[in-house]
Image (cartoon, rainbow, N blue to C red):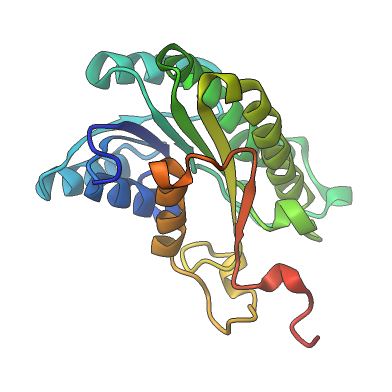
Length: 246
């Protein structure tokens, strides 16, 4: 088992890509902290893991609230100890409601998109990074997006937040390398569980599956990916290579 007895926390672990990652990590022996804003979703995933012989606990948290994140971290530490693997998977392109063009956007919409797609990652990483520094080992995976690489018309805030996530990843990788901690980003494109990007065409002629993203996350979180840090790994079926007609 590639993650045997490692303690991993996955935000957004109650659904979609986050759920797939939590389940895959559990299959490889990790002890899971499943974090989601929806308590029932987190509990369902934790129960699924326990039902197959794994170890997991559910935590409900709004990652846009720094105080709530700190409180959640205390609960995790009390029940599971130090976190060795952190996956910041919570986020989304439509969490603030229908797309708003920048020139017509509201402050509330901006705060929601940037809050969940960037600030939540910062808050959660800050809450657990000292665990890894104390252990002098660890893995941090931040879920970004191809829109953080290419930009996206009509969804400026999401693209900006994901672009910020990528540069946060690179900067933190430099800071944490002396402690044996790797920090990487994953930028999915058209994944079936993601309502917006899932409709985009790809060069491979299909959308990706959340399980494929989970397999990549496992590689980066395990010893197989020990020499990779500060990278942004794109998993998009070749979409970023250019227009489909080229």
